[in-house]
Image (cartoon, rainbow, N blue to C red):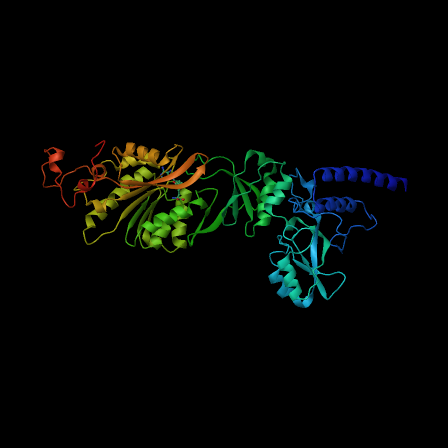
Length: 509
Ligand SMILES: C[S@@+](CC[C@H](N)C(=O)[O-])C[C@H]1O[C@@H](n2cnc3c(N)ncnc32)[C@H](O)[C@@H]1O
């Protein structure tokens, strides 16, 4: 009995200091009550004062105010690195309303703004004291002060002949009832950012954790899996993309280490090995934007095609597609996705360096296509170059790319070239760099589009332009004209002459 008394004395001292701190910081009623509940709960058999999920009425001795910490897990989980789900449980006090079984369904609709909504938590529970009644759990943050319902709710209760008396209920919140952010905020060091955003690629959650989160990386991965149905694997990017093939180095944080995944983008299914190819779910809008520009019969040359997010939807839209990627794994999955989406016949696939692709198959196909184009037979030719770190440097390929007579301005191929920019004026920066590689001005004849913000002060841009004829063609004159004559004389205003429609060049070739 001395031992028990000692234990009680020690407990009382601790409790006093906790209560003092709580009172000093003007803590609201539920928190003080919670301390009592948690404290006595730890003393086995403590007069049975507090039972989990127990229902009781109490005089309104203390003021009830919204407590922002009310839905936080047990504070003892702070610093946990291996997930122990049971340790998150905590008992909180919530208001409940006793309601007859018969009216519960109708009443729930009217009270939906006031009831307690937590993940995996039933809002209506059995009344342990009355089998003809149920208890409706209310959200303490959403009801009027002092544990009473607001006027409109009271009106509703009157209609259903329900006693508006609100009682208190000891509710056990478990790991399942907390949101990801609440769990991580309770575990990670106080005051640190717990952002747990991720990209979803089929069953894979792709995280990009910050340094301070790395100690908790396995726990974070497991929480993401637990809280997101369908996700069975969490990976973390371990360096910035620097490989030739633009695939991320990654580490499996939790779950199955199966990197072969299936995902959908703009209603099209893609399958690939996420650890070996490039895929970025944040580009879906951009892929869609380019596809919108295409019409059936147009030709698309995709120089850095990846597993096909431009090529396959373009083929679905009845365009003729030439798709290339240097990465043998991307090429393999590109072939697979063409079959998967039944567009194999519409896409010619290549596995070579982008420059060789442009100088070989693209040059040959462009020459042929342009010779077929007439005023009547019009379709557009598009060249997509999505390798933002390098694509601009490939633009010099187009200098004197084609032989023969320049085509009409309308038929000149359109390039959509992607680039990162860390410049204060990214559009200007990208245009200037493109101009340098093309050796001509694009002023007034290009458009730049902000694709996305990649990092603070780093934008991904897309510059689109028709390749100026004076860049694209070796010869600026028609076959009938005398090549010995100066160019200024040779270029007569002509309906079909591209130069006529273009502003004068700052920096002619
Ligand atoms: C940024 S990803 C774009 C993939 C896809 N077009 C998309 O929008 O998601 C760039 C692709 O270019 C490929 N690549 C990198 N260097 C290349 C090169 N020199 N020639 C051809 N492809 C290259 C990579 O393997 C990667 O699949």
